[in-house]
Image 1: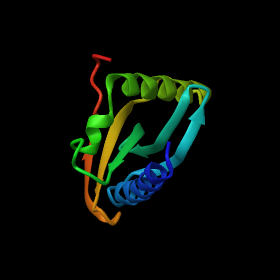
Image 2: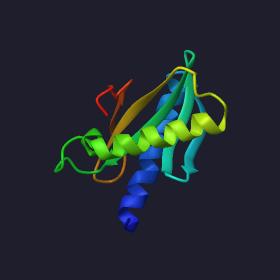
Image 3: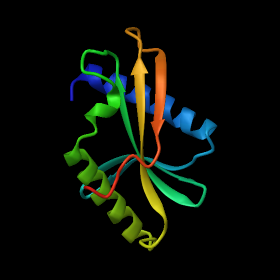
Length: 124
């Protein structure tokens, strides 16, 4: 990943975490690494364990950030989430995957944040 993408991603993640906290999410982990990859954030809210994918873009040329959450990416998130739950003995808890889509202005200020709750259906 090049330097600019890391900067944009880092800014987006900080904005997303602040946004989620303001919505009542209790953030448990950020940038949690497993043997399968990384989960951007893990939180609890309303009795659910929530695995959060954060996507950030500073340009509209590729469409909204959430479009970067592909079927392959979803499978990786699910694998990481199940690993996390198994390691904590919480395999039977209620859980879901949310996506936070962060759009930045050209000077890396927040233009918009969109939360897609329960973003993943059973088709994956």
